[in-house]
Image 1: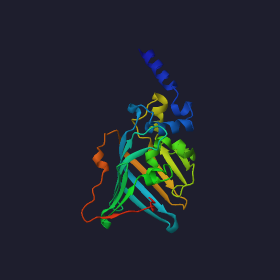
Image 2: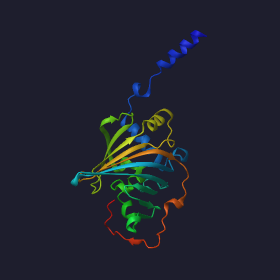
Image 3: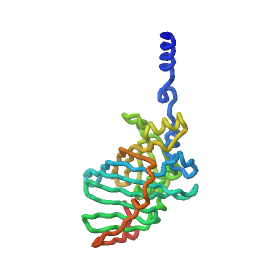
Length: 254
């Protein structure tokens, strides 16, 4: 019995770890990131929706000022044909630095600022054509990142937690984005490499968007829940009485 225990322990310690024995390739991380959101992925392996708490840090380069925010975000991904622009319903609710909501039902987007008694209403098609070029639509197009961006490792491939760091640059010139840095969960990557499974773990831990003027917006996600069958009513907006409706025209710059 004692010898069997020794043999079992030796066998356990001789099993090579994924990180030590096999170097994770860039393509592995990209597949783990994109696959849960691709149209052709099996429904059980897809992320249909997610809810997360978020922390936001926005640095304005021209005045060297940083603003902090936090809140909750909900996304519901809409089925689309392969090759067609991906769309999503979303709801960003900011608690800090001030109360604000950014809501879309997949057709209309509302930016509601209760303090100003105003809501900006836009046709989402104004930004859907900029998939991968506009921060508003970035998360909607997670299944097509390789199409919209040139993806490489960041100078440091991993952070202290072991998560993978990617650097994305738009394939077309963008007035909104110079590059995006994405932190990809090592747990999601391991689940893909070991089990060929996706859909259980939201693959993004954080993003940082840098615009051509050097402004940086960093968003970190935590307490993420996936596939909660979010109700469609979460992604609709009814204008409260006394709130002014504002049409931004072509001046969309979120």
